[in-house]
Amino acid sequence: AQRTAQRTHTISTRSQYNMIKQTLLLLVALCSVNAFAPAQNGRSASSLNIFGKAKASAGKSSLPTFDRETEEWVAAATDDGEYPYDAVGSLLRHGPAPYIKRTTNPKGYEQAVLEYMAKAGVDRAEATGNMDAKLNNAMDWAYQKSAEAKGAAKVDYTVLKEKDAALSVIWALFISPLVVYTVVQTVSQILKALH
Image (cartoon, rainbow, N blue to C red; front, side, top):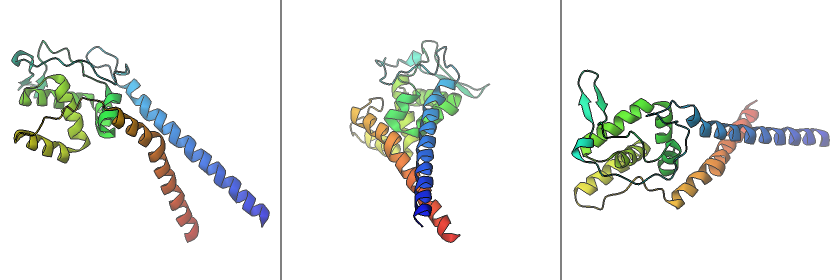
């Protein structure tokens, strides 16, 4: 009986180690997905620009236009096409949804940013922050835009708050793997009990 308990403990420890190893490998893979994204606007998608850059104001001449032939938004000639921060910056500011959209569908993301720029009359930095916020939580974003239309203070979605960045890292490295581990262990125990 003692040998069986010892063997069960060894198997349990080994499965815990494998689960942690798999979670860490998944995190590394998710972080490196950006490295394989196609270059955008002549820049490597893997170059990190987490904290952003200074904003330039959008004049009417720098707003995108809609090309009816291709049915796509086209950036103005004066638009350098550079985002204020990269996909990892989106992840830290607004979570996984905008990060995944930027890395898996960069053309669709760019079209959304250009459309917002044109319709709202804003620069690329503001449009990028708004698209990231909308992708993260469309209902809260729409509520905020409605409140802004009624006179509420405008939210700058491009700002990376240290607290939010720290919370994102804590969730990515500690809480999410713990939740996954707990779910896997619970399901495995339920399956063992059923057999």
